[in-house]
Image (tube, rainbow, N blue to C red; front, top):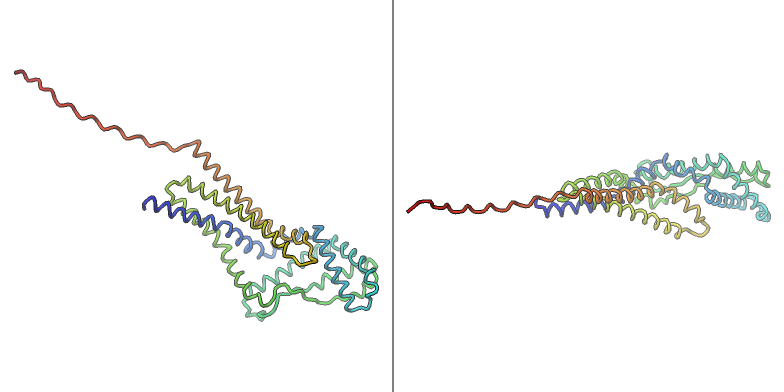
Length: 309
């Protein structure tokens, strides 16, 4: 194969490899991290001790309890006096082991419900149904905590099986297709990136330069992935509706993307390290110059005649 053609094919393969590195990392993170219930629950578990998350839970659950009391009991005149007790009781509940158990259970149930809906093709009778979760067990635990704290009217708080919608029914079909694509991409994109890099380096005329270019491209992909995560965090917080705690959502976003953020920095650092190592080895061990061709041998002198006349 001509050197120019080899260099062109090598450049194309290396460019594809560097492009697929951040995409493959993102797809693998989503397919094998977010889509695994055990890993998801383990990732979300530390948030139960986060102050911002606890405060958001206390506000949300407390408001829901007061709203339920207003709907079922004629106690609106005492709402203002009861509200501090309710929120203090819920805030106190968030510092107990029972809340940690309820938090892990709620995340597991929610994740299982969403994952089951995404992996179901609709033949099991779930087509056209939204994904919902029942938070009645959490309300029941809070009610018991309020009763133990002797909060007025705590025993009369209704505990209903209120379903909270997670995914609308009209979006399930498109989300299922995207999830199936993501599961396939999570495996094949990293494999394709590795195969393209190996092929590009093998075809390169100057393999040391090809290794350095691949390393720099990988570092660039890792840096762009880190910037994309930071931009995604800003956009997520900017689009939140009123009344939603920005610090709590930021803590959840950071927890979910923590592994991917670590991978992005590893790609950046590893790529720069390999590129620097390649450059140093080139400077310390330069390629041996080819010996200059030997000059042509001089033409032999014509023979001298020694014949006497």
